[in-house]
Length: 164
Image (tube, rainbow, N blue to C red; front, side):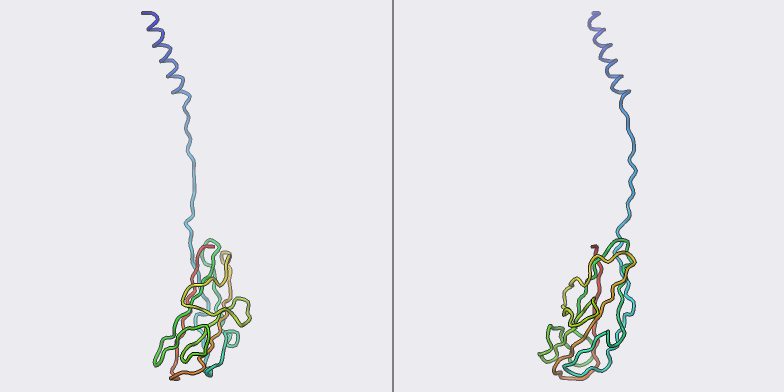
C-alpha cells in the first residue's frame, strides 16, 4: 500500500511541474489593406477636325493625360480602347485604317510615336509605378481612310490600375 501511495504522489508532483512550466505569449500583428487606385489629370482631349486618313496626337494638342498612382502600393497601369460613340456611322477600333469606318488609337508612355495600337482588351501601358508617382499617357488617333459620314465621334480610352 505504501508503494501505491508513493507512486500516486510522484505522478501528482510530475503533473504539477509540467503545469507550472507552461508559458504563453501574444503575438501582435498589423496589416494595411491594399488600396489600388489611380487618378487621371486632364481627362478631356480635343483633337479638333482631323482629315480622313490622317493622324493627330496629344503631343500636338497639349492634352496629355497624366495618370497618378493614388493607391498605397506600386501599380501597373492598363489601357484599352473602344469603338466610337456618337451620331451617324460609328467607327470600329482597329489596328489599321485601311477599312472604311475603322480607326486606330495608339498609346505611348515615351512621348514618341508610332506607339502601340489600343485594343478592346486591357494591355499594360506601364508597370511598377510607385505610390504618388505619375506616368504620362500620350495618345494618337488615326482616322479611317474613308468614312460614310462626317459626324462628331466620341472616343473613349479606359485606364485601369492593378497591383504590381
